[in-house]
Length: 165
Image 1 (cartoon, one colour):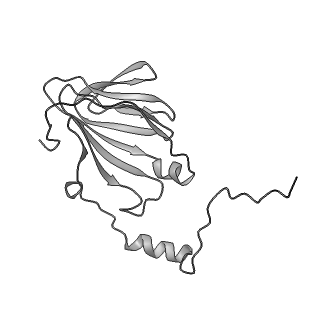
Image 2 (tube, helix red, strand yellow; image 1 turned 60 degrees about the horizontal axis):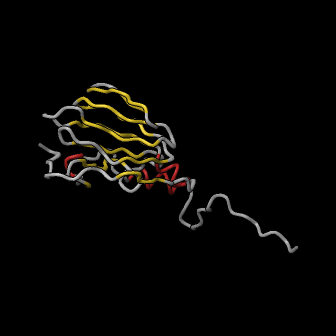
Image 3 (tube, one colour; image 1 turned 90 degrees about the vertical axis):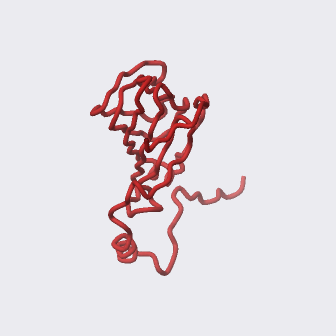
């Protein structure tokens, strides 16, 4: 057998401009406040996401934060991902199904989705929307090339829901 090739486990950052001081200066120039009202909603028609903080928008290199809004009685897609997530429930009441087990929540609760968990979010109120703040360590997982995410079942379709209503 021939000589083994060297392996690269983490991609190097190579540039004459890169260094701790250069990175510090980049971070100091980046915005410290992101106006949620200026960010666009994505998804729909019954389950919407609005990215607030990610490595492309602010100096946070390991955090990702978004807001979710679900129409009355709606639910999200059923999916799984390697990164953990924490949901802080802003408005509404509902439940999660994590690996087949049901967990109830309401405004003021925090919900943890463990890495590798197949899960789905449900708004149990037929008359009011549910909103939650979601914080993830997704950028760190992406950096380590642990970015597996899979759709198990798509979210429902229905008349469009205005997430700002």
